[in-house]
Amino acid sequence: MHNTSVTAGVVAISLSPRPRILLVLEKGEDILQINGSIFSKPAAWGFPKGRGKCGESSREIAVREFFEETGVILSDSDLDDEISFVKEEPSRRPGSDIHRRVIYLVVFKDSPQLGKPIDPKIQEVRWIPLNGVPGFGRDSIGEATLSPSHAIAINNLMLKAVDCKKLDWNLVMEFLLPIEAKGDEDRKRN
Image (tube, rainbow, N blue to C red; front, side, top):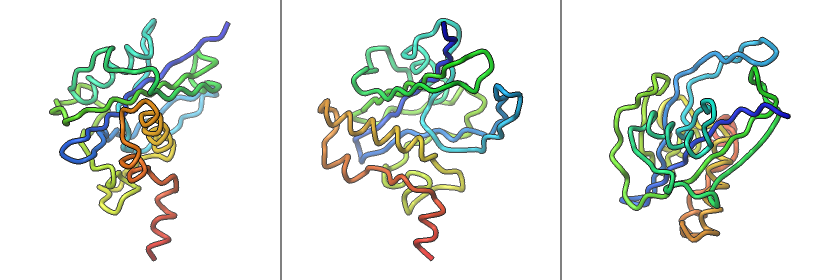
């Protein structure tokens, strides 16, 4: 029997007044790896997500973490298993053999008002135009960027949302995030 650790989160997209995505700026942290080494994770923009507590389902984790990081209350019914991104891989976390990531997409007609994050590792929460995602658009904010793995998850979720008729194909095709490093973008400009 495998010990499984779970991380779950929510990608939130608002369609009005213009297409925007809710991102959180996480402070950097040191993470203990299974081999005893320390991974220094830099500050980065991402979607609200976090680790599960004993016995929590991925849906419960996603709802709890979304509230802790954004101040916005979701219910279990806001999450749709059809529009989720699931990935399992060997775990590098102490006490687990397998790590499961589950990310849900929630589409809001209008942007809900953000509250103050309860989670101390969150530095900032912001609705950002899809064409201004940090590290991908010309209007990028600050030096912290969105990781390519987050961009891949967001793109996959938006494409699944088209299949489920939650998002319009033309909107998604206009705003798919490029999956290339920020350095590549900088070299193209010079």
